[in-house]
Figure 1 (tube, helix red, strand yellow):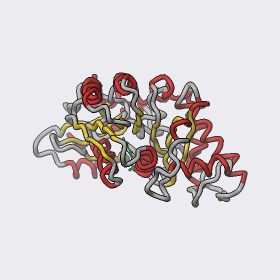
Figure 2 (cartoon, rainbow, N blue to C red):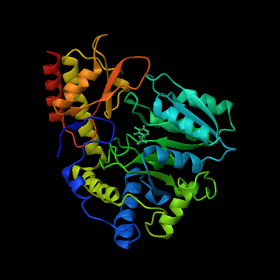
Figure 3 (cartoon, rainbow, N blue to C red):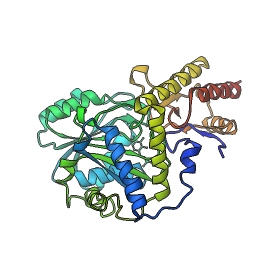
Figure 4 (cartoon, helix red, strand yellow):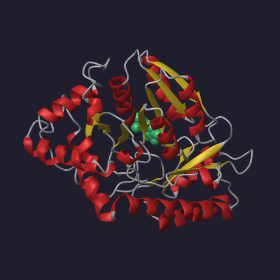
Length: 362
Ligand SMILES: *Cc1c(COP(=O)(O)O)cnc(C)c1O
């Protein structure tokens, strides 16, 4: 059942019990599913994200993570608003593309891919551009694995009283964070990242009072976050259209396993150990990380090609035969590949991985 471990940024290696949870069929309109699964998930996600859960609500949305980012931007930001997007990688830029598809008045503030988003630059921009209403930023930029300083970014945005939208796709569930304390208005993640479910839906955790003002804002029917919320609230866990029932049931199991592991803090520590084991092993083999340790998240790690003639495709194929699937790089400035530390993977897997790489490189 497990031909290889996925050491990728999602879909991830999941547990047998999460996969087993998909073995029954649920009716998308029945209370067993709506009350017994969907509402439970919504409540648990809100409590995981905020120390004041009563101020927030969670809306589940069909599709991959990008669908939820699009639902959030397209339903919370009106064309006449002004959105600042701070980007230091592909996922930040993707929010820029969404804004242009929707005709949202926006500014894409670009940082180097190997540089963290700088809260001081955001602060300056907001001082000079008081017409700004919303700021969007990626927490962990999966492009490189860089961790953006959410604390200082949120402080700058809140100092100016702006609405903060965070793409925490690859960090939520794997890095502790409190929306209420930081003042985050909307946070987006998906089933197949650090909660360790299987792919098929995303979710937006959002301040109730904000979402309540967004009726009629969406310019897409299927991605209307307000309408999806309204139906889920009034219908006690009803989705407007067919939901990925098996995936949703598996996600409830994944949440249970997150809790059994000791919650987000404990999971974060495991990912950190995975990362540390990986980096120590790779450095011993002569590989260099793209990022300095201070900027690096525990989620995914980028490595430079060890030489100019390094054949990534060949390396990838050989590693796959040994039971590990890794990821190509995604940046233009340097030749890199990436190894994910998230999912049902453990420090001993990274010991085996670096041993496999040693054999390949002999
Ligand atoms: C995975 C990810 C997304 C969503 O990607 P999908 O392919 O649509 O699931 C968005 N932002 C970040 C930071 C991600 O890591």
